[in-house]
Length: 392
Image 1 (cartoon, rainbow, N blue to C red):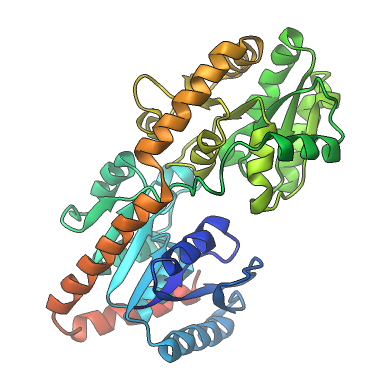
Image 2: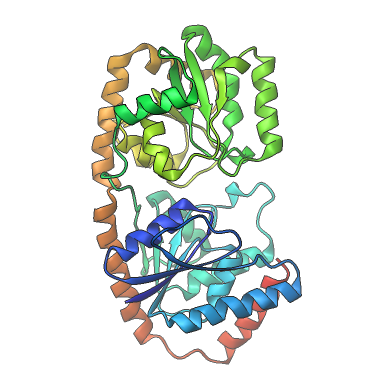
């Protein structure tokens, strides 16, 4: 089947999922707007990000023209919101499969909230979809606030490929040398985006207590899509707490190097304000690295019972105490890491999740075949889609 995958060209997860779909034997082309990450082996097409009505019209023509030439038998949209979602509805994509990612249906992940046009664009995509793939049970419940989609929604966590994400001590040692870390440094890693939503400042504020308990502790932060002002705030916090020398920024780490970085870490920690099911949690589990999480409903669902990670209140003292506890108790850390790897086998193996994706594709094709031909009301709605695209 020819599958057009629409997603963020700067998301390693969206592009990785497109590659994964291709392993099912489908002919896949990836469509996006704006910058595109290197994607060897993936057929990809992008258009410049529109800035104003004229550029929006040009992007629309280029995007829809590319889709038309590809003649997809199914369109798979990653993220049920934003400009790409509007383009999918304008294209009249059918059968349409949508992966719900988190921020698209969870307004708590948008500090300023969603505008009326943004909410409308998301609801349109959810209504038009022939199948909805949702990353967690919690997001499935969040979806209920947008309408009754129970008959076409299913949980697909995607997960990780254990052949790629696995513990690699040799690669970890080589990376330690490249980063200039001492042999006895105890590494705490936060692999999340450096932006206020991900609340990395809570970990920086907690780290003075961690260093007091474990003087060899260092905090590594990746710089993927870093917010410069927020990063400067983290540096100021570390300097004020006297731990600037124990804070290291490791740059925009290539996705292929993430297994090495996760294997290097003694503990992975994250405490965002809101989240769906982070891929980084599953990747840490795959690499058998113990994890500390700020308490969110999605995390409790992911780690199961008994918990495969330490889930603690989202405040510095609790986070710091949990991190220090794992650094000081190797047996407890190994137990948690082992439990995490077992939990991954239960909820997050990519090969098994891909079977669910293929089943969703078959269901979407069958559902689309029963839908009536688009009438005047749908064409009028697409006119509003075009207007909202031009205004966003």
